[in-house]
Amino acid sequence: MGIHTYFQSLTDLERIIRCPGKFKFQEHSVSAHSWKVVQYAKTLADIEESCGVTIDWKKLYEITSSHDYGEIFIGDIKTPVKHYSLELRAMLQKVEEGMIELFIDEHIPEELKPIFRRQLREGKDNSVEGQILEVADKMDQIYEAFAELQRGNTEKEFIVMYRSALIKIKQIDLHCVAYFLKHILPDLVREGSRSPIDIAKITDEALAS
Image (tube, rainbow, N blue to C red; front, top):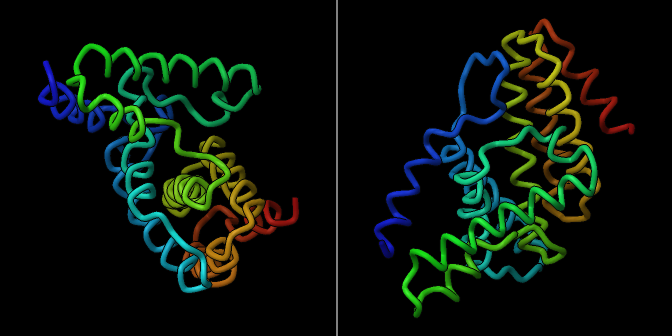
């Protein structure tokens, strides 16, 4: 019981594999994904700060490092399924939030419950930190899909992942998004130019949609 149970539960995130049921050249765990999202987010936040935007760094680190903790209870559900309809997404979020609340009630000491409720909440919102989390999360989706496409993985799932993540990112009005599209994405596309899959074409179509 107590904080030990929470710390012990973190190991479960290492065992949950993203994009289950599809052939992959390289597996990615939810735990590894969460670590990468923190790394993306802190660089994106630095770009925002360099443009004069005030960042709540404590909030940013809390929501990025814990944003997928709820997958301990429901597993990784593929993005196309999760976002098939607003109703389904709302139902999944309600289940996830309910399981997290139950976990906090049963295992976290009373004096720390408010802290855990804040840290494990849904972090994607209209705040700059919430939007950075959204961009960082989708960036890792792009990089995971890109790595598979670059190696010639013909699973359609990865084209959908790459395209949908890029479309989502370009719709977010942040300085770091403009930076990503202008300075980072072109490097990624150039690196994928030798792939048997036309990553440049997929990228252009996503940016044009």
